[in-house]
Image: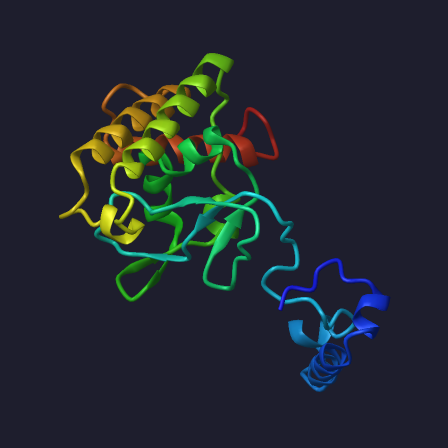
Length: 223
């Protein structure tokens, strides 16, 4: 149940729901005092994974993705769909942000810094997303990425009955979608200042250089 924003009067008027919330509070208070559940006992009506979620369009990011895929299958999720613990979310409807996240650049970074679940990639919001250095894109470069990102969405729409899992299976990926991704890759790589047709090793090396510069505490002395 999603109870974000419910008022005390509204909760008091629903005795069965109030009883469930009370039971949740009692359960959380009975947990280990250093754990997350105990710390959230004072807000028993809220779900743990979605504490920072605000209703609105967001980009859904699966926490685990097959190592066979060239791109993590992300997508926009519209208002009213609440993410659970098996979906990360980026609260934006920006085509620019989407374009960078579905690019070869971001996926190359992910393949190096993400964790693993057996042989699959385990995406981490703190390890992958938060540590990615975004390009210092010009307005023209941002506009180009917005355009190529929209091209990806339009290529997907040609196959309305296909799931993202099917569309991003490397053996089944439609030629239109692959072509749209390549256009987006070129746009994002240009924004990062990467040479045309950079290989993945070159992309990762460039990203780590940007990261080192970004996190250097002594400018001019970090190599």
